[in-house]
Image 1 (tube, rainbow, N blue to C red):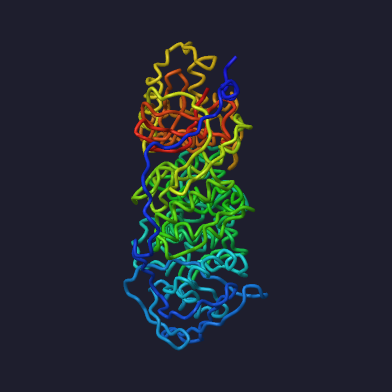
Image 2: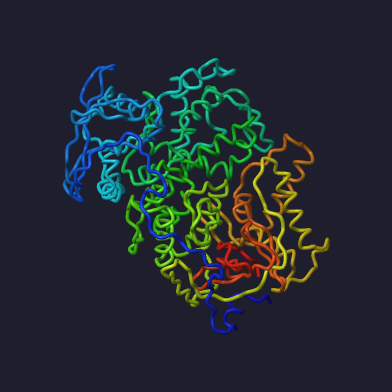
Length: 622
């Protein structure tokens, strides 16, 4: 019978308090001069801010295609019944600024905003518009802070959100398959029809696409061949023009689409319904992990990468609303970019649904260090206190405590998997009853109660996602060699049973990711993972570069558990996976109130002999 961490805790002495040995002094509060604040298309007036509940709506005056753009602003109360639309767009660069007239005065705006104003005027969408660059005095920090604090409500109350992706692509290379430009009316019509079918949950191989299916197990592959009526290359290139745009990379666009009652995408003169597009991508993502895995995986060139990237970008936004109560959005979208670094956080505040939200309010007069420290402190002292600890430490600015995330840092491709691991953490319950008592003092020193489990005696190389699946298999081989697993698999494990069994349970973190939800992994799931990896190994040996290794829920569950993690072993023999920052000599703690596996240690703090160098979630099989 195996020993569990819960039993170790129950037998332990009084919980110890973990405090960092390394004290980095946070800089005193400073003004916005710490980093320059540059915002294109701005008001220069410094009149007092309007009422806290008062906003402005914009009307674009009628005109012909080449007429100057003239707009007027009207003050309204957000507490009154209103019928208006919000614009969601990317401001763009300061190059090629254009001139419009706002309330009779000339105003410089970015070329992208100028283009959408012309598009809206031409199509009759001229009145009752909320457009941030026009309706907020961008250089009046008092007014801006008050308006930004209401932006979540502004977008949530709008009758519709118009998402401007940009002008239609022009002078793109012609497709070798259909001799059409990258963006064409015919291809867009076909794309929208394909998305409509996917929204109805049609299998990928049943779409009317002229693309050869190379899947060896697909029942319709041979019959279908090139019999589809739509040109796949043209549809795919049209898909690129819709999905590979900077709008998906921006912080503010998250709440603007997540909170929308209704939304549509605008690209040039074309449009796409968000409800259909999001449902299509959610269905496609599920099919790509299950029944249609091999069909999509067999697509030529970078086709799979384009489809998968587009689906994930949309799925993240489509599913975000259901996960707001857990604070998952804070982890999920921390990689998004903003012109003003402060907006990396302010752009997410409107999504908070907790009855005890953070105390941080938009304030454009403080430094990044102070904002990030305040936000982390408020998260720790609220129900979201695990959020700062589940992010791998990446800090590009100085003056932050080691446990305070730097929200300006660009994180790698493991961001999505960090979200899943964070979501998984709430499904564990082995340390119930052990309070954390988190506390942050005036110097932003974090103290939390926990139990010292053991010390790391060795760490393996990191598991990294590469284009070659063979490299991932090689990492797994290296991990098994790191543990010196015997061929016969009879090496005993400190927690009971065999070390080999403990290794394979660890490779799934005891969780199976099924249809966007996590459930406890079963012995059958572990066996399916072993079979999946063995089949992939045989395919690689037999077919080389032509091997078809599609996505599967088994494979995804494995990658979510180990990506950007290292395998480690403690001095007593416990094994697990931990952040890449872990090193020999780090101590593993179980923190109070941290959910963890019934057979694993989760939410561990890694404390170096040189002081706290990293706080992060680590999953350990015991």
